[in-house]
Length: 183
Image (cartoon, rainbow, N blue to C red):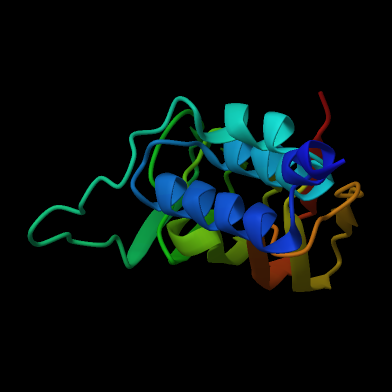
């Protein structure tokens, strides 16, 4: 019976795995989508055998660089010409999207959130803004829309300590679409 108890994962062990995953994402080793997916799996894991594969491809205890330079703010501006961003890239703590008469598409499925949380500020005038987030990411949206709708898709089951994206902003005559990519 003691062998069976040793195989079961504790809450503290699940939390250790999630912290390691968040650190790996902050280092750029995991995308936002990978972080969200693995975090959900960690919180649902019942045994060590389910937890071990979640960090098996990550280096053990890698020290951060001597002087890391965190990305604090990133801009995405579209004026009369459409702009889109996707792929594996660092997402800053504060991100600003300005869309003036030009649609903006921001795909965050492979983005890497700093410390598991980021803010996206949107200013849209006569243009739509499309934001795609991976499943299992907590999205907190408070966009003021004037003559343009704000559409938010469901983020699915969001585990505790899931990565968080706060979306703020103002949209005038332009819709804002926040959609969740489902596998």
